[in-house]
Length: 236
Image 1 (cartoon, rainbow, N blue to C red):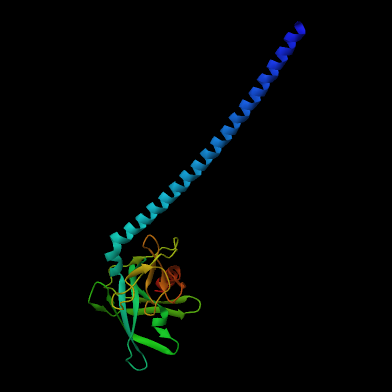
Image 2: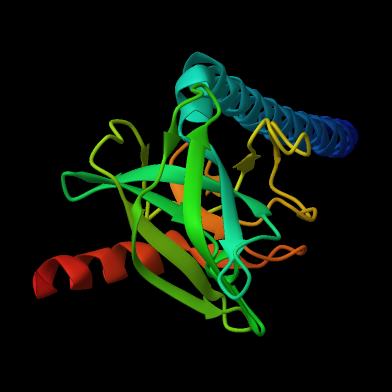
């Protein structure tokens, strides 16, 4: 009788162990599945948060652009010059005003001053938002087109507004144009068209990062120009 009881108890114990094992297996499998689902949900939420941040940043950048568009366009100039060897054959181009070290300057591409065998003179500039012509002094220029050192620096005391350079966030985003050439008013940074040389290139904060000089994505970085202005100031 005692052996039968022991045998029944053994079978009961084995049954309980098997039941506990099966329940444990499904329990931990369920936990792992829930953990995977939670991890997937966390990644989805992170992606959603990242997408939301990107959208918020784009909206913020566009707000900066829209709020300052009139001021920005007032810094862009239509330029005219004539061939020095004949006093005619007008050349038109784009320029812009910038603020650096407590002074305002007009900047354009250096090949608008000298290109191949042609040299230009009698420079006149008119802002997008004004009909008054300015005839500033040419302080300095380089036309090293191949090495992206292609810029010209002018000064006129009547210039009272200008773009501010950003030598840290130098990622190009926008290009401004003069309304007289009827090529570009405002566009994303991209391939330039003929006549856009001298246009200002802005970053997402609408700060100045460079000057259009070629019909590809190469340009003269603004830090080259600010360094040359500093050199000129130190020579005075």
